[in-house]
Length: 340
Ligand SMILES: Nc1ncnc2c1ncn2[C@@H]1O[C@H](COP(=O)(O)OP(=O)(O)OP(=O)(O)O)[C@@H](O)[C@H]1O
Image (cartoon, rainbow, N blue to C red; front, side, top):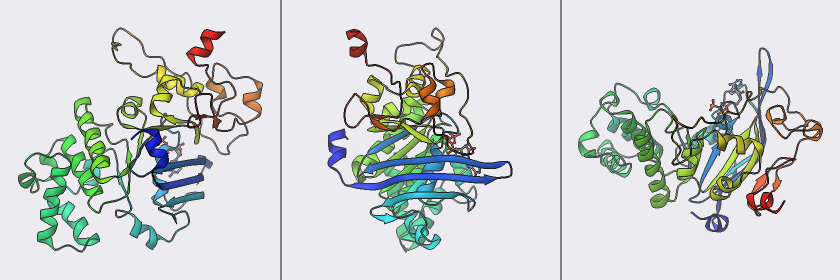
């Protein structure tokens, strides 16, 4: 979907100023701080950042999947219905039907003693009140939809009889069984090798094209984002630091963190054994309270006193109205560099 198309499509998911913290034995952990995000119908948004940046917590907070200890504030509206603070019974109705999830390791989510057909069928029997026979027929359709060959035969397979990529396809089939409007895919391809990964990303793209599903894909891998996303949200230490259409972000990242992530990612045509990837020195901080400062300052080559004294707002960067960055010293574009 183009950015222009996304901006005219209806907003399905509207997240505003979402913050999440966890009380722990060693003090409070502030995991997410003021995240705002829209997902349009049929749009694929990628959320990227290193481990511990708050991506999964943001994703899980949408349908109230966080542990009871989590303190959540802000607003998450799914087709206009507020989910933050909603009753568990209301959230249960939303899960599966309106929003569904796929996670990294399908083996831990699938039941090893039931055939995949029974597992998909149970979802349909419970949520769609289908008969067992009708659910089996639908399960075969769903397995076909996610690209499993000989679906009529594989429907009777147990999870251990399938490859990792096929198991992930089964998980996707279960997730979309009830036709959710939004799919949250949290590191859906991380455990898979690259060719299998490409196949799974193609399945997600097909779902968007055929069913109009909106997808939030969470990953630390910019290659996955480049492959599938229409727009990207870069998170660092619980905050959104940059948000842009995919081509703009790769063409000219503004935040120094995004630039660091890009230079740490493999580029087409650059052979890994001959070119060392850059690393961003330092670690993502675990914060107890969110400071009024740039949380990336300690790792940033351009940081100065201003960065340590006040948090930069997420505002329109020079690239265009859809490109926002929270940085006091954004990277210059090549044109700007050339004009100096
Ligand atoms: N249940 C919890 N209790 C306490 N802290 C938590 C809990 N869940 C997450 N956190 C903390 O919240 C922060 C954000 O975690 P989150 O899992 O969202 O990061 P992430 O960007 O998804 O990283 P990863 O890719 O490793 O999952 C981390 O510091 C993490 O330790």
